[in-house]
Length: 324
Ligand SMILES: [Zn+2]
Image (cartoon, rainbow, N blue to C red):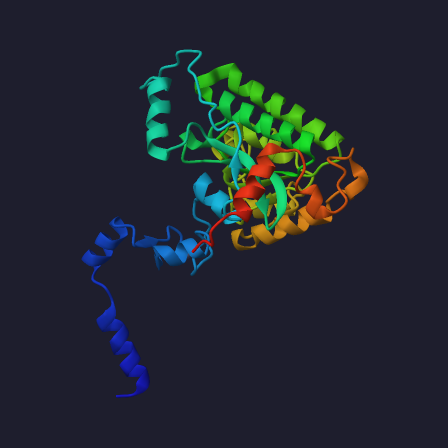
């Protein structure tokens, strides 16, 4: 038997049965890629940031996972984590909005569809907002709007770059007009952040649509997107019916938007941290650009300035245990 045959035989005999495969997928040991059907060991997939090792399909990640991927261990300090949604319109479709909120809160462990906080990205302090598509399709209601606005305002006050990882089906219809108002509110806060000469980078992930695209997703100084993400305002069918025209196949993808000048770069998830760090460092204002914060003399002293959230982050980082 040739060495090649021996390997071929060995692969055949070690192949797992379909039943065992199904069971192990159900147990969460293996994950099947929806794009190419490749089976990947869940831990390997996690190490590769939920990007398929075979076809580079970018699978969904929760907001908590995303924070782990981007922020230095133990340096994340959530802000306004206690803000929770109300049901001011007593909205009801097949189910009441209050019940829907409660179900999603139980399912995701989050109070609403965004996490915001201050953290260090390889030592660079930043204000980070991460939307969570798993919470009611990442829809933007009053809580998403208020948390992002306060995050940006805090970033402006403390001179931080702001990064928002977008993933949204659009405005949350259960809050009607109140959710539409969030677009203007966040945009206003971003305008003041920009007037202060600070950097804002939205990262558009699959899918970024509706009111989010129509406001803060497209207001970045540098707009990044993950490969093959769906990014658009109205849905494809609606546009086709309105225009009475067939749209190109790649319409509303990152690649199409890059070719048409809507976004600045497509960054694979495995390169995102490095790219953000480079952009933040390139745009870092000189130390004397702002009124003194405890008279910073050096970068390291500047990091100990007055922001309690950052002091907390630095304290946690310095006192942390090495993580596995
Ligand atoms: Zn794949």
